[in-house]
Each structure stands twice: as structure tokens, then as C-alpha cells.
Amino acid sequence: MTADNYHLQDQFLEAFFSTQFAPLFYLTGGTALTRFYFQHRTSIDLDLFTNQKDVNFNDVNRTVLHIGSDFEWSLKTQVSADSFLQYIFVGANSRQLKIDIVRDIPVHFGDIKVKKNIRIDSLENIGSNKITAIFGRTDAKDYIDLYWILHKTDLTFENLYDLSKKKDLGLTELYFSYALAHVRDVTIFPVMILPLEWKKITEYFLKLSEQLLIRVKPDEK
Image (cartoon, rainbow, N blue to C red; front, side, top):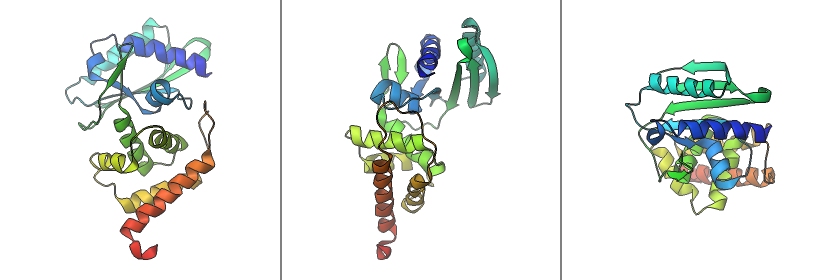
């Protein structure tokens, strides 16, 4: 399944980043992280973000539908809004490709890298988004991705957390410590390429949760 889906990803990315919208968007999220940085897990969705407020999403929509038509993909699901587009295309052998196209807030960290004309988000920006994602939901892939970033690069939690607070003004040590503690509630995991040491990941984030809680409630340590 993964190889066939990756073929659909590659087809779409090559086509999209050959359009007039190429300079305005970048691939981000788990697929950017696993396809172009760590190769640690499977990721079957494409997240394409822009920080430009003047991008016409109606024009983007027409371009995406044209790409799907060129590849003779059928459109299973489509959601359209001023700042958000979502598609589920079905290609050969019933393989599916989910694409989210998002107008993000005008705050971005790090430098975009380019590989084979595909614009790829920075680790700083992906990492800060993973923190805000954990703040808002409990999903194994967010904990796994953040753990990989913090253990495979020179980026620190403090650095990424400070960046994240510039994206989400409601992010505080107290509430984020509670969000981190939900790591023990995870029961569904992505398909891994590299070994998943979930016990280590859980222990790491529970310890980090305790450290954040001590900052705001030192008398409870």
C-alpha cells in the first residue's frame, strides 16, 4: 500500500510544483518529515501550506482538479473553503491520496528547502506545528514526529516551544503539560519504517510533562 500511495504522492507533487503556485506553497507535516528527512514512518496524506494571504484558492482548486483529471484519478471527496481545500483522489488499483491545502497564519520559521522542484518545510516549522498539534489533539504520529525531531537534530524542546507560542497565544506550560500527559492514552499507531520504541517515547514526554508542571506549580514537585 505504501509504495503505491507514494507513487501517487510523487505524481501529484511533481505536477503541482510545476504550476504557477509552486513558489507560494510548501509540503509540510508528517509526509514532509518522513519522505524528506527521517524516513521513520509511513505517511499517506499530503499537506500543502501557504503563508500568503492573497492566494486565490478558487484558482488553486481548479489547478488541483485539472491535475487529478490529467492522471485519470476519480474524486471521492472534496471540501472547499476560502482558506482550506481537501481532496481524496482514487487512482489505479483503488489507491487513495488525501490532499489538504491550507492558508496558514503568516508566521513561519526556518528556511524552505527545495528537492526536485518540491518546496519542503523546515524542521523548525514542522516541529513548532507538531507542538501546537499535540496541544489540540492526541495522535501518536505527533508525539512520534516531535520525538524524532528532538532526538535526531540539534533542535531543542525549549526552542520549538518558544516558536510555537508565537503561533498559538493560548499555549501555556500548564495546559501543554496536560496535553503531553495524554501520550499514555494513545492506542492507535502509524505504520513504522524504523523501529518504534513507544515506551521510550512515552517516558520522555511524561517526564517533560512533569518538568513543565513543576515550572508553574513548583510547590507540587
